[in-house]
Image (cartoon, rainbow, N blue to C red; front, side, top):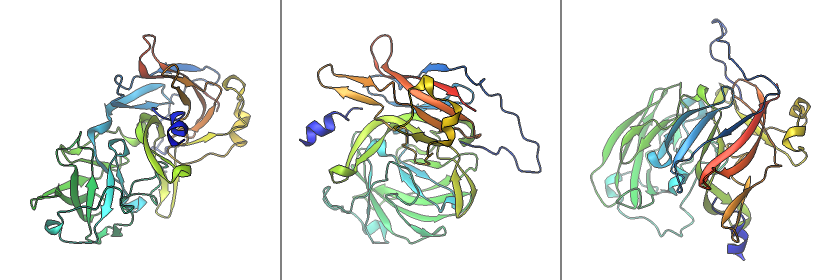
Length: 341
C-alpha cells in the first residue's frame, strides 16, 4: 500500500533596495493583464540543474548544478542557521562529542538520531538545530551521511568553530580519518547564504537575493502521514530572503495555494486579500504534477492557481501548463503568470 500511495506522488515578495536616506531605484514591472508564458529547462532527463527565476523582470536569472553544494550558512540576523542540501539526500547526526579527531564511527542508518531539514525551510526546523549561542559554538562534532555518488566517503564529520556577521569557520574531514580541513565561509549581505561544498570548498550556486523570486530545483519532501518518510522531489521553492531585524523577520517572498481559487483566467486582484500567504519555501512545491504508471508520464494540474508576492511586494497569479518540451523531454516545465497589482 505504501508504494501505491507514494506512486501517485513520486518522481517527481518584497525588497527595500536602499535605506530611507537614499533614493530608491525604480523597478520596470510587467504591465498588469498581460500574461507571460515561459518554459525553463532543468538540464536533461535527470534534472541536474536548478533554475532561478525573476517574476518581476520575466527572466531566468541564473542556472547552477543542484548538487554543487552541501551546506548553506545563514546570517547572524537569522540566528546563524545551517541548512543541508536535501537534494543530495544528506543527513546529520549530533555525536555529542567535541574532539573531531576521536570521532571515527557513525550510528546505523536507520537510527532515529539522523536528522534532516524540513522542506518548509524554516530556521527552527534544521538538522543542525541550535549549534551555537549567538555565534559561539557549542563545540559539538556532527557526522554527515552523504550520497556516495557525490563523495568517495559516505560519511563526513564536521565541527563549527565560530561565526559572526562576516563569516563562519568550520573544520571537516572523512569520518575514518584523523586529518581535517579548516575553511572560512564568507557571509555576504547581498546573498541569502554562504555555501560550502565538501569537494570544492566555498561555492556560489545562488544569485544575489534581490535578483530572483522562485527556483526550480530538487529537494527533500517529508511525508508526515507516512511516519515522516523522506523522499526526493522536483518542484519550486520560494526565495527565502527576509526583511526586518532580529526577532522580527518576515519573508519577502510569499505564496498562497487555496482550494477556493478559481482557474487562472478567472483570478483577479481581489483574491489577493481573500487568501492567506505563507512564508514556507515549499508552498508551490512539487504536487502540481501527478505521475501515471500507465503512461509513465506526468500530468500537470493546470487548474491549480497560485498567488505569489514577489520581493518588491508585487502580486502575481501563476499556474503550470506542462512538464515536457515539444520533444517530449521531461524536466522542462512551462508556466503562465500575470501581475495582478
